[in-house]
Amino acid sequence: MAPAFTERQRSTLARIIFGWILLALLWRWVSFGMLSQLEAPVLGNAYKDLLFWLFQLLDVPAFLTGTSAIALAFDVLLTATVVMTIALPQRTLFPRIYCALILCYFITHTFYANHHYRPIIGLLVVGLPFAFRSLQRMSWMVDALRYYILFVYASAGLYKVFRGSILNRDQMTGIIEGTQLDLLLFDPNSAHAQLFTWLLQHERAGWALFVAATVLELAFLIGYVTRRCDVWLFIAAISLHIGFWSTMRFFAFELIVLDLTLLPWRKLLSPRNGNEERAHPA
Amino acid sequence: MAFLRNTFLGQVLTRDRRLGLCLVAFCVVQSGAQLATSEVTPFFLYGMYSERIHPAPEYVRVACRVDDAELTQAMMPRYAGELFFSTLYRYETLEAEGFHDLFGPFLAKRFGWLPQDVRDVLEHRLSFDPTDRPAFKAWTHRYLERVLGRPITQVRVEREVYRYVDHVPQLIRREPLFITDGPGVH
Image (tube, rainbow over all chains, first blue to last red; front, side):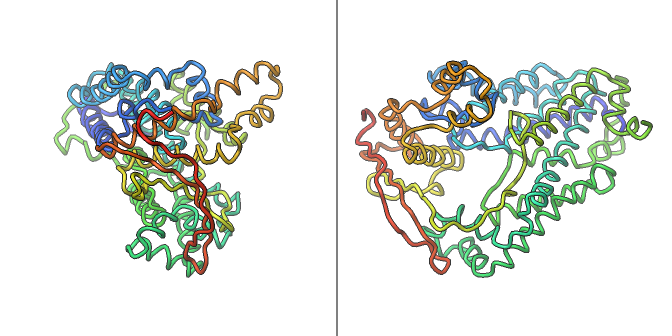
């Protein structure tokens, strides 16, 4: 089992993780994705998710978006907890408030986005380790998140095998035709549209890409038996994200923050690199 | 047993029972969600296009014209575009289903054991209320004015149906969904 992080390692890691979260939130601010920018939406979707049902039955989404002042206060508070964690990474109060607020944000935004966007789970769970005061617990939570991201990718690969889509030769054709209609209609001469047209014309090439992605996802099972391949798995995760963007124009920025747990932080932030403290007991 | 004790979960359980039990509980519920193929935040199923998908004979597209100019998702900032067009697609689906939301059949299938009046209340509270259509149209206008940063005279939303012919999408038919003529539309 890996040793616990030191106080200084914890602070550095908190700044890196919450720096990423801040970027994700700033992107949402500039692209009108915060609750105060939704203009009191009317049509939502509670999906088949019981937690969403609970929020809707308690009128939480309407409460958080219906009044501009409340929505703005919520957004500012959410962003402020992230900034405060970066400024004071040793405090656990701000990550705790952040975790509660980001859950409310996730459910309310996803409710009105009418699209169950799962990658945002990255922003939801990645703050959890820093809500623990004990360095040992924080370290275990970082390790638990590492196993979780392995599960995310590996289960995607296993689903493709067990549902048989890996053998479905027109899988990519169906995906491209269904998701890239706008691009093919309005920007047919762009490089991206040309690639999609080529993949539609060469079904086997599209299928090969799908099989390659599945194999790459299944490779994450290795992470359950050894940490030695973690850097390669990190590269595989980033390759998958590049592949998703290239072949589906889908970029899950919020999920990449969990990929960071595959990096050897204990080594990268070791005393040799300027960290001179020793781990505290749990 | 020794093997289990050496696993990550086993070690956490041995050294910090409370945290270990929380992690085990998470794994158990997550596994249950996988088996039952049902999602409750934060226990998601990560299929990532793992359903068998075949090319469809026809594809529905929701077209939005703002003051007679085509507006596509790519023309909007990322999260605004996703939210706005996903909402239009949901409205299109509701319209196609005669504004019968998905919750009735789902409640009957998975929650048939609940008393009928409880299911009725749940369905009513969760479903889109068709009398909110004017408010929804006013919201599309309001939201677009905010995102595009300029006053808008008219928003026209239509359902378009396409078919791929030699890998090129061809328009089959177009039907109006709704038009807004000002932010105070009702």
